[in-house]
Image 1 (cartoon, rainbow, N blue to C red):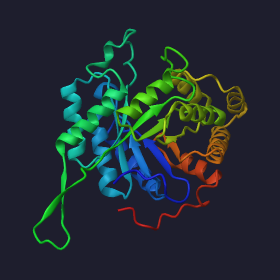
Image 2 (cartoon, rainbow, N blue to C red; image 1 turned 60 degrees about the vertical axis):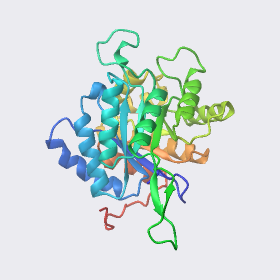
Image 3 (cartoon, rainbow, N blue to C red; image 1 turned 135 degrees about the horizontal axis):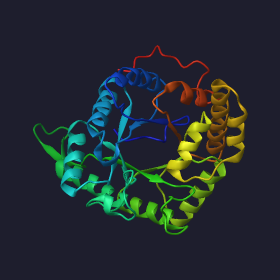
Image 4 (cartoon, rainbow, N blue to C red; image 1 turned 45 degrees about the horizontal axis):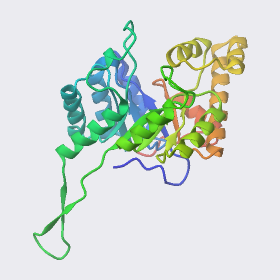
Length: 320
């Protein structure tokens, strides 16, 4: 079932990550139940660097596929992957019924040296996009459909397609060589077969809207979803800046620092993220992708405050 961003309303989606321990799965299953109840277009599951959580990722993806009505989306990275290993992994996911992917170049493992030696055989997300499509084509080169009115007759039908999302960087990738390289990379991913882009987090709506405008002028036609992360503490902000290379959002940083309580800091983060959601939606975003940190309360509060959800999401409809 392809990811559909054209239906009425503002499509939403979420990102979660596999817990490091078995004990974390029960809590995450409950979070997924709450997230699924608001009808997201998909829930994406991250994949550990170098394959460190691959098995747990697949376990979580299968849970979403079997226990909810929501499309699961699997992260895959180039880091440390040979062609043979990546092909085997993609086939394993496809065999499990996972047909939506986020193809990422990936970040180097902690402590690795400069350069691209950490990548393995796959050197770019565009190459990974092509490989996913090729594996699916080899696995299911075509399907057969019955010919109406002719018993026993079949015709060759179009083969099932996979959805392949890719990353986009409104303020530039921290390892980008020049200002235009991020849009050049997005064009390459689109040419390789990507069907959707999801942005890294940003702190100002103009960052996303300006990037989309530049990408469209350059020839990018695939939907570009804004990735929004509620920042609910100074510690989380510091960690996010360390990981992404984004510039310090001074106003948000000060607002978080002056709040003496965790609840007050959470309220600041929810309000900031909700305003971002309103601004990008008003600017024409095709949906909103929220980084959930394996908790449903904050991201659902953001959507409620942004006016995209009722104040009390209903849990009565079944999610199986």
